[in-house]
Image (cartoon, rainbow, N blue to C red; front, side, top):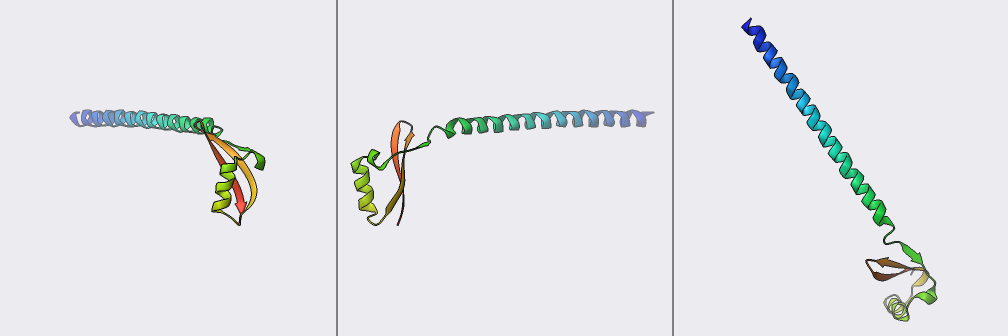
Length: 97
């Protein structure tokens, strides 16, 4: 009879440990899904924050255009855009040599 009680106690402990591990695993999965969801949402919200806006060559300030032409004298401009990032304007010039 003592042997049966010992087996029942071990089985009960084993079942309790398995249930506890299952709940821990579920909690970890829920936490991981929540963190991934937050990361995806924050990426989507900031994706449009620094979007490029196409502009014409006349809209590029002369100082920017002169600096570009001095740095790349043989380059042919193919496109230009402006990017507003954290309150600052950045001019982007696409070119080929």
